[in-house]
Image 1: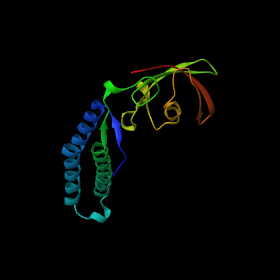
Image 2: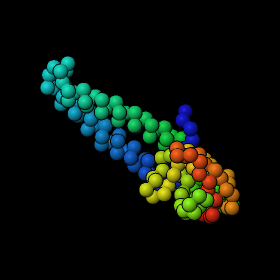
Image 3: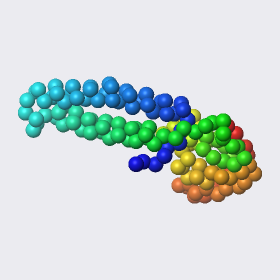
Image 4: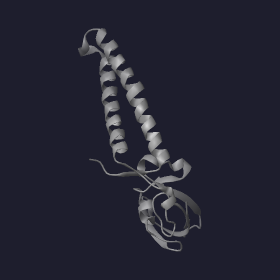
Length: 157
């Protein structure tokens, strides 16, 4: 059994939609490609067949991973989220104490992470360093380029 995956209802709905697409559209499509390649004869020198079988294996791994995530999904009740300290689904405004640059991140599950929209996974070093901290706290976070000090400016939803 996989680890619980905390997500919003939107996140779970997106995951289920993607899983449905893989099972009802892509799986039959790959099966058809394999059948067509098989019909072309000698499988020992059939690159199309090999490619289709490999694609099928990758697809089945992805389906299994998504099924596991859906099975272990825990919906987070957004109305019960506390903002007195940093936790999943909070937006956190932090200031780099070295250059006074402000950034804001929302802490989300790995499946919902999207750095372009400011959503970082709770599994990242920055998020792990911020979890449980309060406004005004200064945290030192190890990043690939060294250690950066951040001051927590604001916690919101």
